[in-house]
Amino acid sequence: MNMARKGVGKNCDIIYVKQEPIPYTMEQLRGMFWRYDTNRDGRLSRKELKEAFNCLGSSIPGWRAHRALNRADDNGDGYISEEEVDELVSYAFKLGYVVK
Ligand SMILES: [Ca+2]
Ligand SMILES: [Ca+2]
Image (spheres, rainbow, N blue to C red):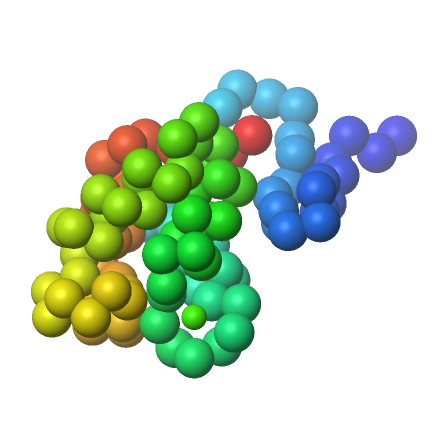
């Protein structure tokens, strides 16, 4: 019997397990966001953020990406860099996304 399925949806790498929802830890969120650095330039664009929030289960991923940039993009270049990602992670953590 295989209850856990990997890779549901082509861009979503979420492990589905049949049990109570568990909130993502900060570390999991961090790993999650970096997985969406799809062009591997070491920073997260608005588009990449939107994709990440979408896969976290946000119903308004575009808005979340916008808010996250407002909050975490310290130098205002429109990207979340490695130095700025902590703020992004704590923003997402407070939203309480759960592992689905
Ligand atoms: Ca990128
Ligand atoms: Ca920035």
